[in-house]
Length: 408
Length: 115
Figure 1 (cartoon, rainbow over the protein chains, first blue to last red):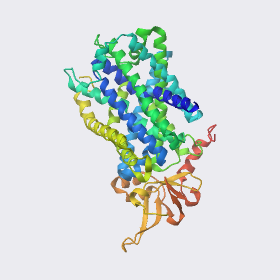
Figure 2 (figure 1 turned 90 degrees about the vertical axis):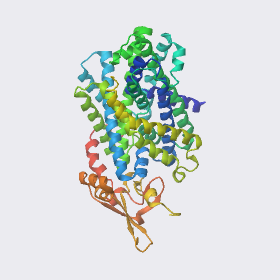
Figure 3 (figure 1 turned 180 degrees about the vertical axis):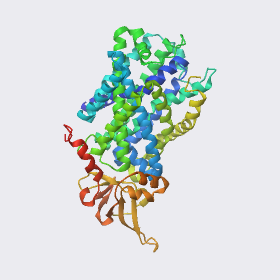
Figure 4 (figure 1 turned 180 degrees about the horizontal axis):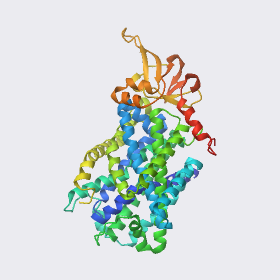
């Protein structure tokens, strides 16, 4: 019974932790522009993140190697270093976007100037990481992020055309502007699979000292948690499809995302939506800052982990602090956080294969994994999603240029 | 150690762990002997930024940008090889983990740093 309870708690945290600023932006704009047509892209993105999270969690538990340990061991120093630089640039851009998202949500809740809220956001994140134990951080932000379920209630209350919703799960393009459509396919895939999730997930398995006994929890968190997290993405897209698509409005602000809960559910809906966004995005910011520190420490062999004290892992500690400060410096320049989000998601797709390939290689290596090496199912999905990600990674930048960042 | 080990995949770029289980660097390169005689042996593990020079063009660039010393750990100091390369003594005995020693001063003053 206690075991089931524990698994359920982990899954809940995974659901609330799934959505970040990239998912919020891309799902909402995709719904506004293409109604339900792009739901299928979310399914593929969620499938990819489930497959590779499960795999890298298993690799971490069995071989005690987190993501960038595997990257360096398999790609060697030179190519590994390129993967590190690409991964860190994407992490930094993602972190800047999340910090901007926190400040935007705070602005809608409290109404202070944006730059003041940025300072508050970064200080709060730093304090939380410094003071809270690892397990708490994951849980607290995941649970309160579940307030985003208000969008699922909102989506149902808006009475979507369910037949149309169902047809959105079958890939088809009913549009005059194929480049913009494909740009959003890339964006939705990228938003669901941002690399920090894999980095964080694998190091998290070591932080929480999982053993092969916990592989069931690993599988449940990845499969159930992320599928249900994907439902939140559907809900965001469907509410946007109901509210904005018929009126040909393109939601450009976080406030208009909140309308998806405000219109069907009133003030309380809006409040829950903003709290959900605030905590989901804050959780993502923390995960991203940690990911940056994990990657550096693993590549260069430094002591790392929140289970170590700051004195025991000082370079790791300095690394997440520097990540937070750099992320802050990017958004405080006055760039539009929503645009930073879009760029971070598109570039993250480009960097993704450098993480997925070493994980797939190590997961298949029996010298590391013994009987826990990939079976047929994990390999079929692993190779399928790797091919998809490779295609998307190659297409991402050209599509970004041709579609003028999805503006047509 | 028993059984054959693939040096390139099984040792190179792996984590170094000291006698207290602390992570204290990576195997940046290996010093081999008797290669010409056809009976190669690992003499020592090499770690530290100057060693990256031997790791291709990107390694040379990284070595030029980074500061630090070469640390040479004789292979006889290796306790065992599992998820990492475990050494027989604390990191300080080899001069490993000096970056963490320097960085420690920067965080140690903050309340709660030892918790």
